Image (tube, rainbow, N blue to C red; front, side, top):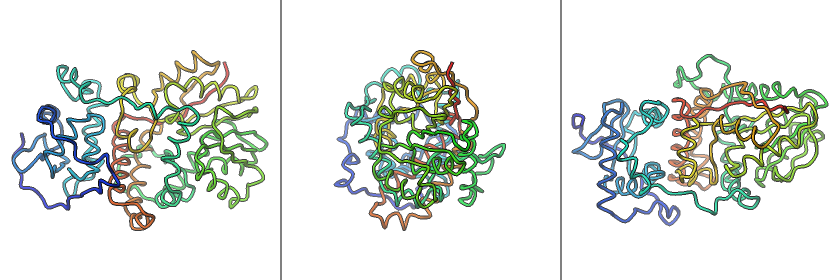
Length: 431
């Protein structure tokens, strides 16, 4: 236990539970509350961060600090759901970083425990054996069949084109940028929105170069987003079919393609990847596999292989995690799945290799790692999101939504900064 500190003044957030029913305070359970408090003590005993649980209890070794405003509610949430409780407590306003502490900097020590092989398990083995009591399984309604996938994707990507436009760069590229520097996270305090567009175009070009896209190439873009990759390919003279299952996203993608003057070279279709036909010289898919679901990974890679013409090349950019962590968490219901990406699951590089070997004739090769670049991208997005919050709130989003997106972006940044997450560009060729 650290030296006691007086509470610092901080405005305490109160969510509108009629809008956010999942944030209603859970029913008090003394056993679960005691278990959560015990877990905090165990986690914090060698954690380079500080948890001020209330005015009388502070844990940790110092460093980035968080202040719990409502201890009972905080412990009740953790005791009810290990996968979502910590993030839900932040959404509900039960805790905040201490003033002057960046949210991602606070989350980094927790993420480091997961990414470090020797300290990966936050709790001792006896406590880990009890996690099933507070761990939820993924709900069946988030199944990624055709109907479920469309609903899951729409809940995120059709949230608001205007909202995404406020914090993404002008290309509307919603994936890791490529800054081309030796250490993109060396000084995140200097991360600037002004550098993002060039870094995103560098990323798009790296994908097109890897796939050998040139004038006359036939290109399929699976999960095309707001069409930045499709536009960039068409500007090389390629013929592009861009598909998405997010209806509002497709409408804006079509408009952006027309505005770029490449409407004669790009066709946007509201289509599931399983329903695409034809042959292409290049099949591209950027950070879409995370929304496919484990059950459908063989189907996804089989679809890529079937669409490749003889001599064709596929490039998949994928967020990945260590294989052991993927196996340990693949059946749990996480905060990100509950609030950000329903039906999502991050694969490992190994499972991609295993699936492609077992179910396809594709050979996989990692051509680039962008994990550190993603951390910088996320810091820029979060800074821009906060900066543009007056405009975003004017679209009808409340302060709880702001906290949700700040936590999502900071949580993700911490994962990439520590190596718990990586982002890889994979080259797929037929064996």
